[in-house]
Amino acid sequence: MPTTSTLEAVSPPLKWAGGKHWQLPHIRPLWEQHWGKRLVEPFCGGLAIALGLRPVRALLNDANPHLINFYKQLKRGFTIEIEMVNDEDRYYAARDRFNALLSTGQQNTSEASQLFYYLNRTGYNGLCRFNSKGEFNVPFGRYKTIGYTSRLPTRADSLAHARPGHKGSPRVPSQGEQHRLHKVQQASRSRAVEPSSRYREK
Ligand SMILES: C[S@@+](CC[C@H](N)C(=O)[O-])C[C@H]1O[C@@H](n2cnc3c(N)ncnc32)[C@H](O)[C@@H]1O
Image 1: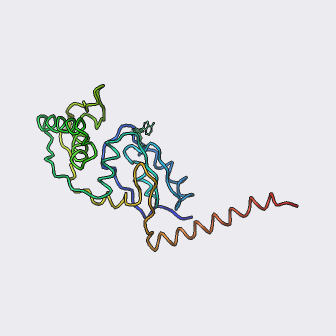
Image 2: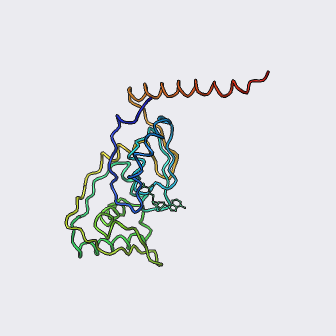
Image 3: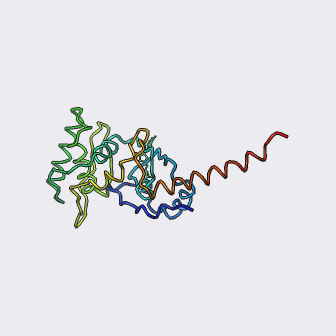
């Protein structure tokens, strides 16, 4: 049986409420029976499942446009250039700047995604909450230390085959993956023969 064990799980770059990381041990054995197929996640959130399973192809979607903008930037691979410190004044200044970008139609920029990452890591419990005016209003968090990552190229590699909100574009599988894919395809072909023969016309 082919497995995904050669592809290590990648830790999600964002904190995200309701992450299903804890369900991975239950989902992985089910997914392994379909390895090589496209993973479809309509509510991908923090990507705990997609990065845990590392599918060859994925269709990832989420209603949160800031999350999707962050993943689009991440897919390209980007360096966070804004100052990231666990400081209350800095946090509220970044929050004001993020809201200014949203109110001036600049929500899909690299700067917005960098601020989104910083606010996510630094704000209260990694919450993502907006008021009725559409302003991000999560208060400063209460972390003693925060592990910021300013270079995120490896996450881009792991998302290279997954385009959030759109149909995934296939990448070229490695030789090992091609071998496993071939075996999966062979197995599914031989399984497909069995049921149809039962309904063969007499
Ligand atoms: C609990 S989180 C998903 C967690 C994710 N499975 C994980 O393991 O990290 C739920 C996600 O669903 C998204 N969501 C809620 N309603 C949605 C909708 N109607 N269409 C698409 N996404 C939606 C939210 O933005 C949120 O990111």
